[in-house]
Amino acid sequence: MSTPRASVVRGPAIIQYKGQSLYTKQDFVITPLLKLGPVASSMFGTVTHSVDDFMWQLQFVTDGQLVAGHIPVLWPYAGTYPGTSMFGAADSDVVIHTKGGQLITFKAGAVTQMPPLFFGPAETVIGACTMICVGKLASAYNATGKWMEIASSAFADTSFDKSLIRKMQYTGAWGTTPWDAFETDIGFKVAFQVSSTPDKVQGVTNDYIFDDLTATISALPVAISETQLMAAMSLDDANWQPGAAIDTLTENNDFVISGGAGKPSLTLTGCSISSSSMVFGRAKRIGEVTWQSTRTFATGALTNLFTLAWS
Image (tube, rainbow, N blue to C red):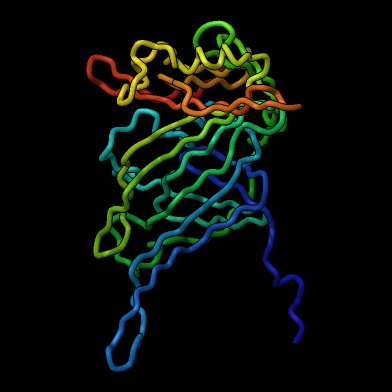
């Protein structure tokens, strides 16, 4: 029997989360993460498998639109303390709204890896985001609507604005001349690493607990000499020695990436050079440089590791 073409389901969709509509650069995939555990017998080996855990995983790259409302939604952990619930006291559902008119709701979602950022004319600003959905709070595991719901709803979102998808030029500011306003070969790459621990109830993941956040900036600077690089690495600093904290070195500064009015900007606190290279040949003498951020405090309280905003 031939399958009717009209029976084949396909088509694009947007992601709606915490009041924001997110259009994606490519097709995106939601994956059910079902963990099975073997049930074994010495006599017969594995006789069946048990359901040990379940959640949904969503990975996507936005199309590059960046508005103020996206910032706290996609980058929520700038000032989060270790031990904090990443899913919170109330569920925030992840809704997939298809152009064809389906509303597919995945219960209780949270960002578990924040998108990296790229500041430069070679690519749009936002990288890949990872979200996890752990199921409706205070609901039996086999209850209807625990994990997802599907409804019909005509697609009516009008928030798309192609003028917000821009590839832009940026400069970096870190420390003194020549680093107080320098350019790169293609742009600045900002990477965030969120560490977390699954929190389980009856063996099934119910939450993720925030453990830590670190961030780095990488770029290949232009018009920087060997001497300027060595000075920036603080190798002659009186405090430079094994065991020294990088925020005690002379060249430990906030790193600011900006492109002028109407463009996004980023400030990453307490940055020191953690890796670099010198190239002897046809390439630029100074290779890619990476800056490691450090935490700062105000009267003993944790301050934000980064600030992402509009200039």
